[in-house]
Length: 134
Image (cartoon, rainbow, N blue to C red; front, top):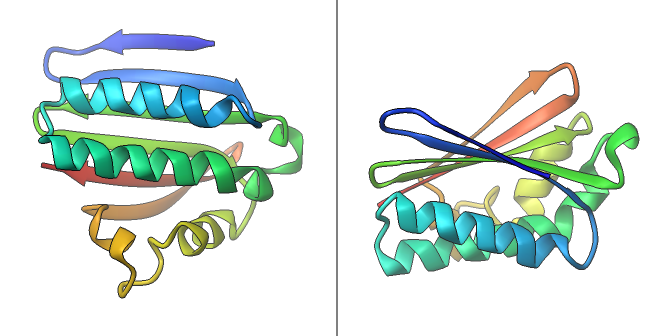
């Protein structure tokens, strides 16, 4: 299921897809489209696609039990900025996911890809926010 809302300067898309083999290609296409619409340079689009692939591969291990079968992602794009929010992570899941995809280690090459990362909580569990700027 894909929902799309557009504000004057920001476009937001919500994706719910079954965690599994199709999650990676679907998430990568969504993030690629959003990154292009945000007018990110080609190298930053490639960086965002690498993050998408890593998230899709590792996230099933970190979802709350009630959401084990569904990957929930919100992707927001604005002028030269992309934000990816991964929802419904178990407690500690965001930190573990960051470590597995290399964003938790400042010495890792992927750590230089994200402009910022942060973790918030909501009723579904932890939310991991990853921002990629131009």
